[in-house]
Image (cartoon, rainbow, N blue to C red; front, side, top):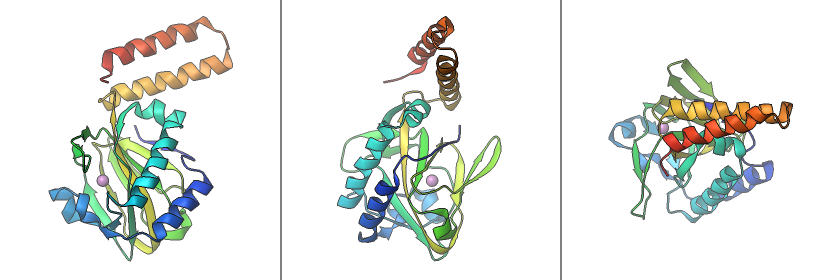
Length: 226
Ligand code: NI
């Protein structure tokens, strides 16, 4: 499932991020790339240990937890501490698949990347190019969202970032280990969740809503690892 989640951050939160990031020290983005993706990657990142990355990362994780759409779609077990990148002057990231397992730096903890997320921190009109291009079995999707909006997609997907030919593309990116590893099962649960919410709104008190909620939880019990 490829899902766009609008307004994860408010305009004020985006402005706060941009102001903090503007004064931070950036490094070559290959620091967090695997062997294969290091050849394709050409951008800048905030170091994972940078206090600004940690402060803004915590703000983003809190915003995610407050987003019912994110929680329903991702069913998160663990969220990788958000990272920050910047592309400018023709920089791009060629086609790759994200590493399956990521160590959380400075900790003994690892995370399986079931979902990849990009949270846009620059407005589309601030830069030329920079589309996130995601390939899945339904075809090729080009994603370039307003600042504060997030795209969530299966980490199994091939993807790349088009060259940024003018301006700067600033974003946060991270991965999620879901309680439900399989994208197909997770998508079914999300569709069922949306249908239950709709029936509960359109026909309040309908007994089918309780029955369907039971089905939802019994499927979750069958498929979830916590
Ligand atoms: Ni990637």
